[in-house]
Length: 302
Ligand code: SF4
Image 1 (cartoon, helix red, strand yellow):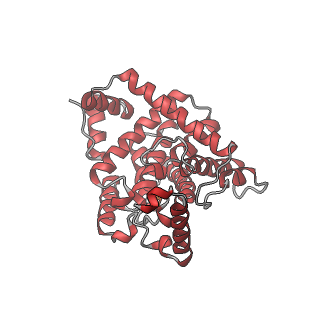
Image 2 (cartoon, protein in one colour; image 1 turned 90 degrees about the horizontal axis):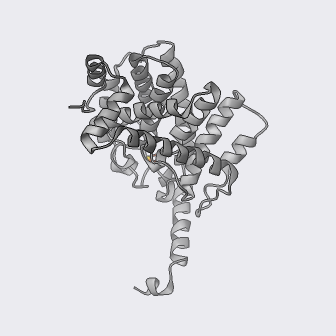
Image 3 (cartoon, helix red, strand yellow; image 1 turned 180 degrees about the vertical axis):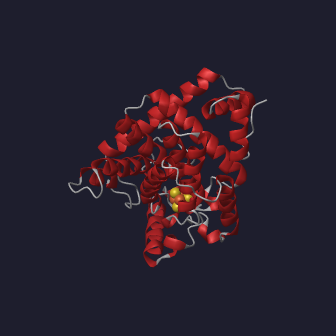
């Protein structure tokens, strides 16, 4: 019987008792719960990572303008800007997270990890981590398995959906998956990995879901970039053994409590926050008119 992902404390105890690594326990779970096969699970993740890398490349090389016009080749502009705020690596990290997410906003192929709205965070962070530290695809796949375990627990105790828990549940969870994966890939121990998750959740807590015109574009795309940056800062903090003070399970509980008490206008309804601003509403009206204009005549008559 494999471990059921209900708490970080339980996950750690299970791995210690059974003497298995965090990624091994996730594989066991998949095999046990979903009749998976070890090799196929790893091959599937490798394929998912290829799609992530492709999304980064596509977003940086191809035309990325969304139908609403709100997304307009932002990743390429950031990637090619001559002035780096922090370092060239940081600039690449931000550009790659933007790139993969822009592909999603422009209806391209991405990996919804954990959701399409947050689909730029793992590609941006992992591709950059791999480049900086010369990691193999196999090591990244192990990091993805750790990220999957993190997501399973967040899903169980809080939520991964913006419509249920706000943007903290989507971009926050993706950033938590990424920071845990980063610490794992750099050789951190279980406490450091879980501490990275706790720090990330603390940084993302309370973020509302307020997509302008109901499209997963603004603020979603830029939030993927900031979440990627938070994943790296959390990993750096955790690797230095700076404690999040509040244990990771309690951080996830807080995330669930905040999500449950969030008003529905902040949960993907496009009725609050940025979606409710004057400009947000004007864009929403324009998008709606555009949609009506492109409907075939017979559909308009119905
Ligand atoms: S604002 Fe809402 S739709 Fe956009 S990424 Fe966040 S949770 Fe997803």
